[in-house]
Length: 336
Image (cartoon, rainbow, N blue to C red; front, side, top):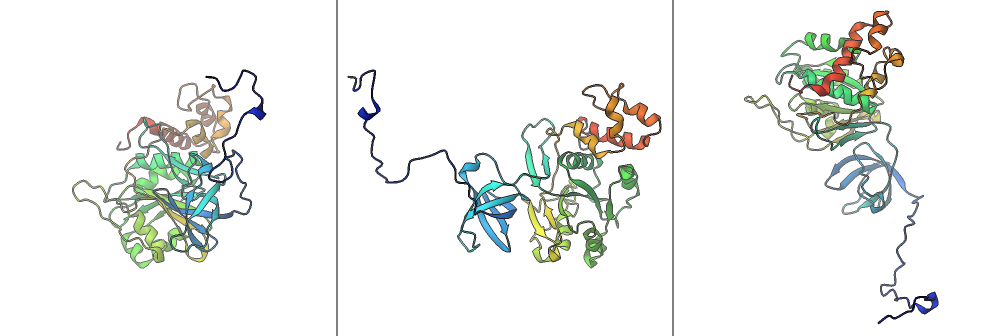
């Protein structure tokens, strides 16, 4: 039986009382103009550790952010309990626009993108010269990810007491990448940390590297007061290192003059997310030569204008070779 006719009047409709006595739901969200800003130091199962002024605050993402996630290095706005005391929890209500992003995928066929670090100025690619052997293809992939994400690369070579760095330096010399060579003895006496520190002052630097290359050991030497509990070791049979860092962690350098972000050791570095057209921006001496390239040129094909540009003497041929080596990285396996 119909309760109302076709032409109902709003006055005829009875509203059900709100038994809970709370306000009706609304799509209008508060602006949180009184929110405080902080930096995300680490993320663990939905809980974020955030530095607010000089306090460490535990926080979680507010519902209004939807699926947008905060990552290490993000600048975020928080409300709620910001005292930093035990068993308190704040809410992250805004995430500031990122200046750079380090991303990777599990492999080149995996469309799922993993955002590792936000707002870093520099990517320190740590590789051992021996034990385990250096993997140039993995270094190439990290370089592409750095150029794509807006980070300046820094090459850090460890264990020079086991093998010389000459071969690796020759391979990357034409890329004009700053580098630091360290040995185990220098790590122990502090000389290595001092030299690396010169490249870090005033910057936010993310450290990435294959497991077992001494990345976390180096971070420990740079930030001794925040020494990690485990440094791991290399498996003598497989040559692979144990993972000693399970999540990215931001640590302040002494004197508050920069940050280091230690990331988990990687066995692969997929580049499914990378647009190859952005890699050319890391080669300012070659970029003007692309003006006459055909549309959607990969810069590694017969009609590419860069060949003529280099032949005319506008740039070093070695630089073009380096560009094309990086662009072809996705087509090769990392163990090549």
